[in-house]
Image (cartoon, rainbow, N blue to C red; front, side, top):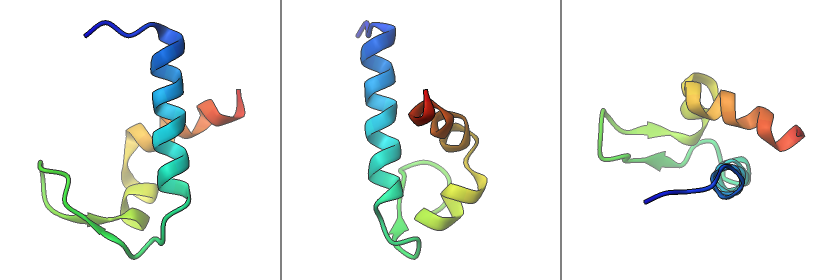
Length: 57
């Protein structure tokens, strides 16, 4: 599937907003690697930390 840069940016903003509005203790099971929590992902997920800066632009 081919996403325009604008559409992909909107998808990333949506994901960040979803993560930001969840309790940090919620356990998630991503389907790859081991389970984690929202808080662990906020602290350790490089994609999350990179994408988070998009909200400010």
